[in-house]
Image 1 (cartoon, rainbow, N blue to C red):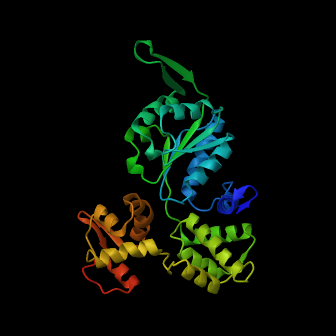
Image 2 (cartoon, one colour; image 1 turned 180 degrees about the vertical axis):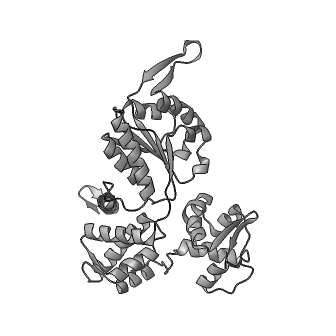
Image 3 (cartoon, rainbow, N blue to C red; image 1 turned 90 degrees about the vertical axis):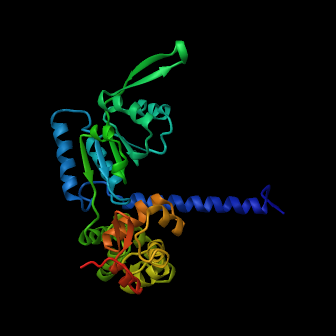
Length: 352
């Protein structure tokens, strides 16, 4: 059977594709709505904000185009891209975003750089993923605002120098140790974003609830804060999921403590913010490795997770909670984790 010239199966696939992309577009619009657009809206990281303001204001007073290149590092979802975006707005230039994985060859970077305008900000996310050749090509661009292209091959090859407009490079990484020393040295300032304080997360959740046009109780805000892994992105994600839950269950646009408990239970998130992936890592450590120590490769194989996923997503939060420790011999579970999981303690390291 065909509908509108397409087999029924193909039509269904097309409808599903359109629906999925519409939902993704809606989620993207909501995400952009919640993202702070000014220093006043950006809650937390006060010292970093102050330092960036000073750098930008000083550059403006000197009549410079742009400011010194800036590097941000810290866990996912802590606001590195948002900080760079606000800084770009203060500088008055366009905010161009790319990532270390998107730049495959020098030609890609040359195309990006040659399309910049004076005063623009180029933001490279996960900058530690740039390969060595790209880094070498980038150095003269951020130091002298020039790039050198090699045209032709063999005896006919020649070098062409292209002048670039003055721009500001801002980089972000979750793994600062993987950013090469020569690249790090070319940034005028490096800032570490830390996990957020509970009081700052509560303000962020309240602001996001207002933007989403939903009401929320103070107790509900505190519950979401505890489960948010000290991270604004997670806090906003949980708020949106709880909102979906209450709207589907008929509570319209009001979130209370009970609705948060139901939603978090449905999402398999416990009262400490541990998700199924976190618990799997801890349980594997207990059941297969007697609490550790165990190496990263063995842990990744046993949990069927990528090593980078453990390092960047799960481990930082478990370390922060004191549920996991790194030792010279590998990862070791702590007595706090045994207590939280209600497991019988074996050889866990005790924390006083």
